[in-house]
Length: 223
Image 1 (cartoon, rainbow, N blue to C red):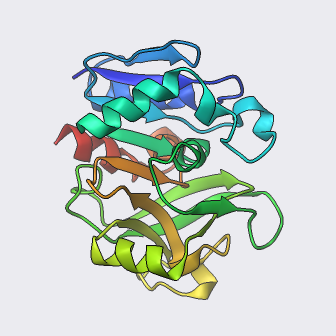
Image 2: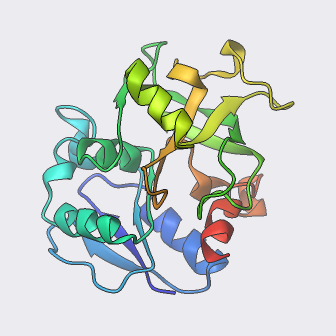
């Protein structure tokens, strides 16, 4: 399985994702610098978390114009699976691959802690092995917003991948860490081959992390 991890100036989870992919999928991904112009014959492209370009302007806005993103978009249109984690989620929205916007957390504070998420669509290539999972978040702009029309279309097309919940799977205001509309923690594109999520599965992929719930994302892709 050929996998690629895009690296921007300011990425800080690229190596974490590479380690998770190697351990779970069984092959070392190719690290792709943001100034490269092409990604060929990929089975999975990951846009990792971090603070691309120092999060100047809107988070992910500058990274979305990097040369490599043209190839990421072209591959996504062809059906190649693309996974954006945290800042990667922001970049995918800024590049137009995903709908909506990611605003400042409702607390106006950076949040770094474990959360519980519930799989809303368990039929996608990213979610076919996941249900209720514990994963860490670390973001300042993870408050997902979309218009009523966009939300309805996402719900009708089963594009909501994950929602924040409590340990019993209940979706409520108390389990929403950042104010995201509908407790949304991750969404899919219309064709279900692009996933953006704020929680970090690569930081919960082996027992040494204290939890390995995140490995189900990578196992789903392998499956």
